[in-house]
Length: 323
Image (cartoon, rainbow, N blue to C red; front, top):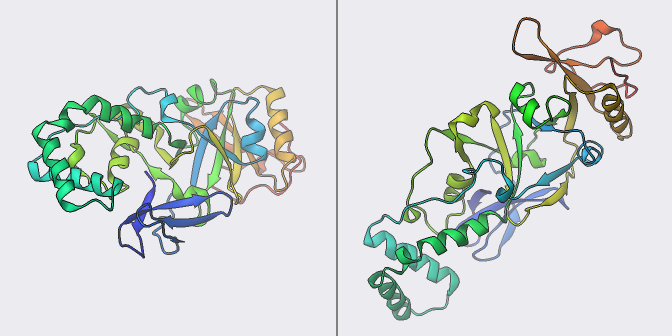
């Protein structure tokens, strides 16, 4: 699911990857091995912020104090349809020949043309692709499950997400700022569809790294569209923790049912940061099934100084108290 760009050396499609150690985006070509700067890759500045709902647990220090991101394997997702490989083997003879040719060429670049076509013709005559459908799906799914994915939302005030991702509103929601330079620039928007996307494996060139991954990793059922999800996905990062090399955390929104003791713990974590962020809270709106997000006043602030989430810079005074 990585962003892609043409390799300047060989002209084939290459991955745009983010290196946590250096904080740089690079174009890495798996065909010729060339590595180049990803400067000039298109970046849409919208949305400015993305949000992450979390329960308050022993990982809170990692998320709030260290600004670490946890990349989970798709195998651990709660939605049994999410990131699952499903496709047909429908295609013309020419599509199948092209597909087989690209696979063989990628795996054996020095193969002679006559030997390659002998393998292709044998595979077509014996329907090896169709006969190995289950095995092929299993192999691709195993590769998908090696990805590491971290999910965000465009919404900071969703009742359902506070319920099932922030432990019945007793947790919090992290507010992250996106920029062209930081890791959030790699996030991509989920497409929500009424039915599972049907496609043939032959629709995609083996040399194109993006489209097939987009179908599998960026499509979810329509019933999840209230989440307004965005994802960052890296190959080989399943169950890995990445510390952001750039400051990304802008605020922490406390759930409306968080206990006073939990609020004190979150505020204490924030006060330990070199750059404390704004502490906000979700409050139940009167006469509506909705939440409003307001800033938590600091010690020297009057209660009327609390603003909404869209107004003003992060709080400058780290000495915050629960209200």
